[in-house]
Length: 211
Image (cartoon, rainbow, N blue to C red; front, top):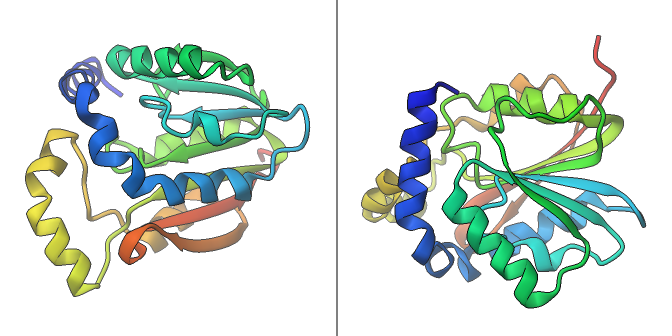
């Protein structure tokens, strides 16, 4: 991600951080819980959440997991850290400011990597997926929750009215599911729908050793 793209995205979410939970809290909670359940973290498993935002998902992880979250927005991370302190979420080990397209972790650092509602707001979803794969251990799971392009007329109507909100958070609704799965070049273990009107899709990939 270029410096200009980072600044633009960070500014957008600094503006939106105070009310983010109101718009995206309960309405997308089912997808968050589904993603964590499908990751199936074993006791002591080290989980990375890419695009942790305000930390809406953090309380849903099992207490036996070890969770690290990253986000590009300092404003969103501040809310996430406040949530961790307020709810005493001891399983959250770190919340770090980091670009998801260029992570500072070593290869194979995590047992599973989860990305929730983020690949539609970054300029290069393919690069995010590549980095997720790199930092995940071979055999580990990559879980992605996101909205993809849909032919549902009902959802298309909802998207029309949500255009101002989508613009504010740099959200794109034209990401193609099949193309995204092909980009991963990894075995797809499951494809499930989540949230109202099946608005979101939960994808589970099994990481494979790098060639």
